[in-house]
Length: 299
Image (cartoon, rainbow, N blue to C red):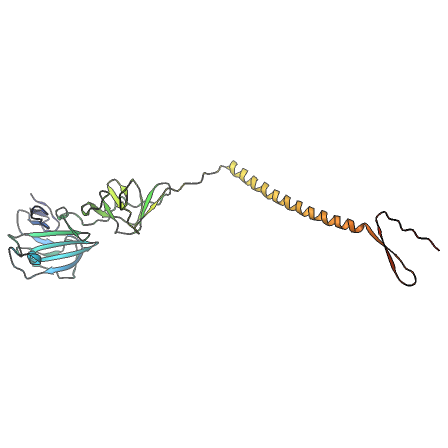
C-alpha cells in the first residue's frame, strides 16, 4: 500500500523495510508508487553537509561505503536527513537547498539488493524512526496556541527564545514526542507537572513546554489591592487633614510655651528698679525691688 511521501517526486511511495526491527535497521527503505524508481527530493530547507559519490553496487559492504552514493542535509536545530543508494547526485557539499529540490535519482549503489532509497532522520542530533517523517515536518513553529496578551489575573509562562523551545505532546523528554517550536510571547497555563529535572507547563491541551533555563519564565497571578469607594476615600482624606491640623496645633502649642517663658523672664526683670541720686562728687545707684519704698529727707 502506497503512502504519502514528500521526498519522492511522485508524492507517494511503497515502504520495503521499516526502521528498527531484529536487524536494527537505521532508516526507512522506500521505492516509488507501484514499486518503481523515482526522483529523490529534499525533505526540507537546509544545507548539504555531506555528499558521497563514485560508488557502485557493493552488497555486504559496511560503514559509509554501505550507503553508496548519498546526500546528507543539515536543517538546523539539530535536525538532519540522509538519502542513500542514489544512482546520481545533483547537489554539492555546502550547497543550500529548498524543500522539494531535486537531490538525485533513486538507485542501487552500496550495500543494496535492488533499486530503492534508504532514508534516515536525525532529531536533536540523534537518529530516530524516519517512517513518520516521510510526510511530516521535522520541527514546526507552533502557531496554535498563538501567544496571548500579558494578563496578571491568570497564570502564564513567557517564552523568551524564538523558534528554540520545543513543544512536546507529553511532559517527558522524548525525541518522538516533539511537535514543534514555540514562538516568543505569553501563554496561559492549562496545567503543570513536576518531575526530577523540570517543571512542565501545558500551554494547550496536549502541548507541553519545559522550564529550560533562560528560555522560559513563569508569571504568577498578582493580587490587586481592594478598590476604595468614594466614601472611603473621603474618610481617608479627612483623617489626613485632621492629622495635619493636629501637627500644626502641637507646633503652635510649643511656640506658645516658648513665648510664655520669655514673658515670664521679662516680667521678672521689670520687677527690679534702680534709683539714682546725684551728689556733687558723682552718681550713686540704689536697687529697689517691687513694693520697696525709698525714703529720703533733707538734712
